[in-house]
Length: 131
Image (cartoon, rainbow, N blue to C red):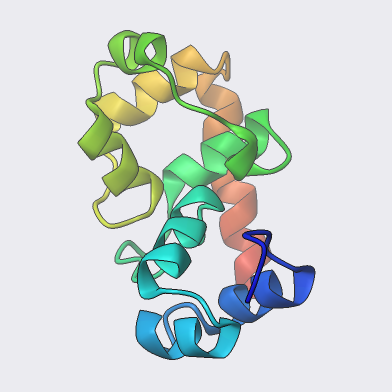
């Protein structure tokens, strides 16, 4: 039986197999319930099933923060960018594409000039092609 704490090995297993195995398969391996695995993935912002080709929200967050998962959204954030909570998580996880208006609002909120955001998009695009 576990004490509720996740070991680094369990976390790495979940990160490596998210999207490849079902919640039930992963939960059996780490000896936890499927709900515990799902909540762990949500807390750690482990993304599965991304639909957009390039997640621009993640790119904006990488400009402002080194790790996008460090950003915690608040009610003030949602009000300032005029994006509701459900919409935010859809675009954050890449389940839906970000609109141009949302992209501009996020850039303004994080204090990123549109030139910086545009340059980061272009540089990232060329770096990905070289790999």
